[in-house]
Amino acid sequence: MPKGIAVNIGLNFVDPAAYNGWNGELAGCINDARDMNQMATQLGYTATLLTDAQATASEVTRAIGQAARQLAAGDICLVTYSGHGSQINDVTGDEPDGKDETWVLWDRQLLDDELNGLWSGFAAGVRILLLSDSCHSGTVARVMSFQKKFKSPEFAAQYGRPVNAPPRVRAADPAAVQANYLANRTHYEVSQWTHRAAVNASVTLISGCQDDQLSSDGDANGLFTQRLKEVWNGGAFSGNYAQFHSAIVARMPSDQTPNLFRSGVSSPAFEAEKPFSIGAGSAGGTGSEGGLSISGPASFANGTTPVSFSVSVPSGHYFAVEVATDAGLFNSTANGGQRNDGNFYASWKVAPFRQGTSFTVPLDAWNRLRQGASRLYYRLWCTASPTAWVNQQVTTSDANAQSSPSVALTAQSQPGSGGDNGTPAITAPTAFPANGAAPRFQVNPGAGRYYAVEVTTNSWYFTDAYSAQRNDSNFYASWKATPFQSSALYPAAFELPADVWSRLRDNASNGRLYYRMWWTESPTQWVGHGCTTPNSAGQNAPSFALSREFDIASFAQSNK
Image (cartoon, rainbow, N blue to C red):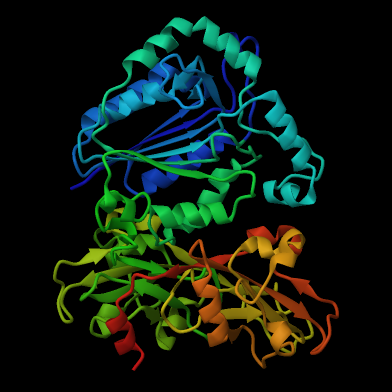
């Protein structure tokens, strides 16, 4: 069985004695490392956490080198780094810009040449996923330019900081790293000349920014790690690595663009997997090769309308869905005896295996499960037979039950009560078949209010700075075509018009569509209006992925 090893590194400080008195203070890097370490552990990795003084160059080298000895073809190594990045002079002439990139560790910098040497120690067929929330362009001029740009409301909102508040960036102080370079110059130059072995593993790097950009630090997480977590959504993300990267980029500001880079031996199978998958087809399947996945809305009203999920299974397979009020109930060995009709539902217990691209919880099961529940957990099984378990697969194994995706149940509104009727909201599943019927949104503007829906190919079109670039191919507003809408009951369903759906999906360059809802107290005018994602934070609007990997024949059959 494939196995995964993770090494998670985060430094909020470095040793001042090693960097000419500079301590490198940051705020979110240890949180980044801890969050990635927790996620890796939940997904079944054997994970090592190295922070601050633990993250010396020798200890990081040892941890990665030890993983190389333990992993074989088919296994995966996840390495995450959050901290300062820098550059030193390249003495070998193999870098076009004359610089080698580095990680600024506790006692010295770790060169990209040294990392390459570590990757060369992994066996052929091993997958290496590297996530680096740092930057490598720490010049005084660039930092000053970044600080000037940061003063605009657009970037202050994106970075989650007050306007005019000084930003923190993960670029090391040039004087400090120069002093560290001179103190370790002989070691660095030896590393540059000697760590040049071929890499037989397959390496995928997603970094926090381009080599000529800066990565922002935050109070809770770095911006890149924060957006990565949002896209991952507790495992609900169901695309491949390229789609994962694109979805993160779509949530980032224009001056911090995460990079996707591959080295070593090319592996289309690795590229097609769902991110962080330990085994082929595990933890959600592959994405572009018709793998196994299930996704649902992040939240859903606890009312009379049952929740629905988007599903994908390999061609020719059948599926079953399980829903529980506690993720631990998916572990049949440990907790199977605690299951009952009020806390656990399995479609395979009450109906044959199914085909199609969506699943709605039956009303009777929905009414039992939602009583007293604040969250519902779900997973998907598939089988090669319509009547029996044959070569079955599951999105979340029993052993990893606690990492199951979930949907939060929000309070059901009471129309006509004269109150606020809950927080206005709009939700949608996290993925839709791009060749399927137009998507439906669940909307709740509040009692006595009317609503309008906007959908766009890029979340930045929701901001004032880019509103002039809107056109029919990239932006839709229901209020431009029809009056504001209302419903006798909330949440209500809003379906995107078919012609709009066709235009927008064909122009969604990053494979996603973004949405928000406006509300107003008048059926014809903007009175007491508001928006679920205001213009000032429009780039953070929710979105759903356009899935193009479903079985058309199955889809047609399920819609007869």
